[in-house]
Length: 164
Image 1 (cartoon, rainbow, N blue to C red):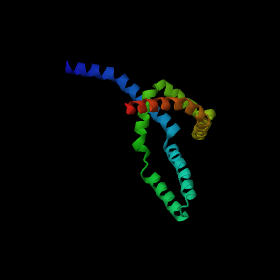
Image 2: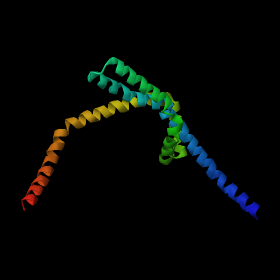
Image 3: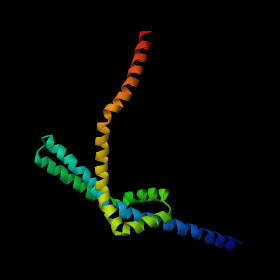
Image 4: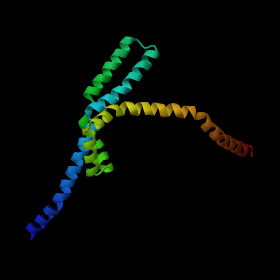
């Protein structure tokens, strides 16, 4: 009887395990294509250049900037470890996409358009973020025009309560 129950358990669990494995494997494939170790290092390095430029603008000595740059690159090479972060990223992908959706993403990223998309996405995202930030700054006066009356109302309310 125990053998029969064990056999039934194995038979019913096998498709679930295979589906879970396939789902996770597909997510790993997508994550490695979209944000693998090279992309991780590239995105972290992108943060370095503005920081180094700021140090230079602040009048820091070139030797200091060179040492900071080397320390950053050493940190990136020795402490930013893909195998430590990738399982967490893969889990996010398995939460958001089915195995079938991940399969479609893998197929797309294998095409020339998909490869171009992956290559240009970080820079396009960076440029898009900059454009959105600049646009929001242009619209800041309209925001302040909406917020100032609210602030004035509450300041007046506080002053009235304080005068009591």
